[in-house]
Amino acid sequence: MRLYRQVTISFDGGAPSLLVQPLTFMNRSGDIVHHFIPDHFAVEDLVVVCDNLDLPPGTIRIRKGGSSAGHNGLKSLIRELGSAEFIRIYVGVGRPQPGKTVVEHVLEAPDSVDGRKALEQGVALAAEAVMALCKGASVEEVAREFNRRNGT
Picture 1 (spheres, one colour):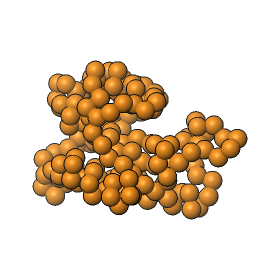
Picture 2: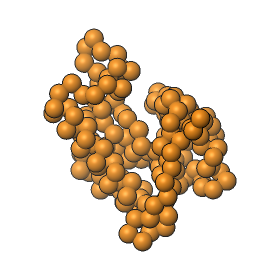
Picture 3: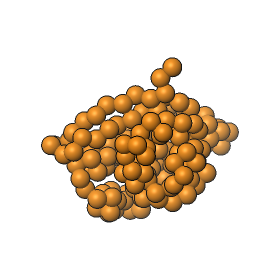
Picture 4: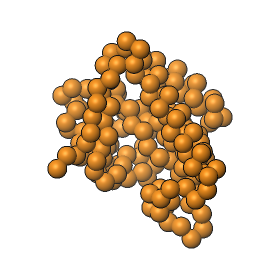
C-alpha cells in the first residue's frame, strides 16, 4: 500500500522541488515524513498546505512555525518531526453551518456555487504561494505578499 504520491519539479529553472501528497488519513499525515526528513530535507524547508476553519473561504495565510492550533494533521506532523518549524500555507474553509460537523464540513464539497468558487480561489492562491517558495522567494516575502492580499 502506497502512503504518498510524489513528483519532483523545477519552476522557472529553480532548484528541484519535491511535491508530496499523503494518501494516509489526514490525522496520520506525519506517518510519511520519515521518508523525506531529516535524511533528504531540513524541517525548515518543509511547506505544508492545509485547511483552516478560522479563515474565510478564498483566503490563505502563510507563516513559519507555531502550534498545531488543534489541527490533527499538523499535530501528527509535529509529533513525527519533533519540530514545528516548518512553513504552513493555510487555506481558509470557514466554519461549518449550524447542524453540520467539522468533519462533514471539511470532507464534503461546498454547498453552493459561491462556496466552491471561493474554495477554488483559496487553492489557486496557495498554489501560487507554493510556486513562489519553490522559485526561491523567502517565506517572509511570500507571507507579506499573500497575507496582505487577504488583509490578514
